[in-house]
Structure formats: C-alpha cells, structure tokens
Image (cartoon, rainbow, N blue to C red):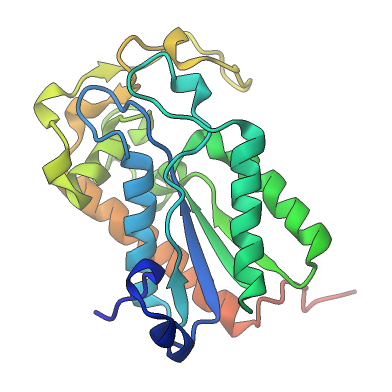
Length: 253
C-alpha cells in the first residue's frame, strides 16, 4: 500500500501525490478502564483514517490530534485534557492550515466524545470565514458501528460504552500489543433515564474508568467494525467526490 500519512511524506511526495482531500483524526489521552491503552481514541481514529486513505484516491492523512477535551474523565489516572476553548482553536487552526495549503475538502474522524462540541464549533466558525470549505465528519464511530453491523453482533448494550464491548473489540483488533484483555471489566449504568441527556462526570457512573461490558469484546468483532466503518466513510467520500462536494438537491419544486 502507498503511504498517505503526511508525517511520513516529503514535501516533494506531497506535491506529486495529487491530494485534493485531507482527513484529520481527533483523539484523546485518558484512562480506558484497566485494560485499554490510554491513547485508544487517538489510535483508533488514526488507524481508521489510514485505512480509509488506502481506499480513497487523493486523501491525505494529517497528523492526529492526540489530546482532546477530557476534563470529565480526569478523576482517573492518567488523563490529559485541553480546555474546550483550546481544543476548539486547535481544530480550527488545523483546518485553516489545510485550506491555506489549497485543500478545501476535509474529513474529521473523531475518536472521543469530549471532542464532539469543539468539532461542531470549529467547523461552523471555519464556514463563516471560508465559505468555500467543505467539511464532513464522523463524530461518533462507536454509535455508527452498532448501526452498520447485523443485529446481535454485540451482546451487551449494543456494544456501547467507554472501553466497553465495541471499543475494546476494535482496540484488540487494531493494536492488540498495547492492551491487557485479562483486566477487562463490566459496568453497565442502569439508572440513567431514557430520552434525556445527563451531563455527568465519569466518576458518577463508574469506579473503573469504563462503561459497557469489555469481557464480551473480541478481535473478530473489532475486525467487523473496522471493515464496516472504513467502507462507510470511504463510500461517503467517493460519493462526495462524484458530486463535486455539492450537496444541493437535484429536485427543486
């Protein structure tokens, strides 16, 4: 496979690569139970980005954002966090840098719940100043994976949770060498009301920096998730390319 990671390319290779799109992985560094690498959110989003670039012509993989907004996890060691304002500005500055380099089509591959609001704010601010920018994102791959795979793939909570069945499975598949599956646990919150959003600190719903059931995680489930997510984003980018990133309806009455 050709290399599409900016960190590993010379400027000559970048200029000769025909890149007209860029993908930015946005992760975090925080506790993920006792069994997953602290950089799981960064590793998953970046590794998925690289695999997507293998499938989509002209897609440049930017260096990942390795620390996000994680103040709601910092009860647990060893969690790093940027402020909301800082991570929002980091995302904004990186998108602006890409635009200055002549690439107007940008995909944001998010790996962490705390980055969802900053991504939205940064993207809206960019669009105000640079209306030519075209920005797409996958804000919650962990939710989309459960929708893409056949019913029954996951055994508990549809694979959801922080370091739960789904996230642990994809970690076991993508980088097994940096995890400790024997230390996996199970914490499924059962007192959260439906249809409303509780603004919790993570320590209010778990005592071990995880939710979900990681004991049900397997590399095979992780493989299925990886393949489904890569296809999902690759197909979307190819469709956007085919339409010139023009979202206007073709049926106006």
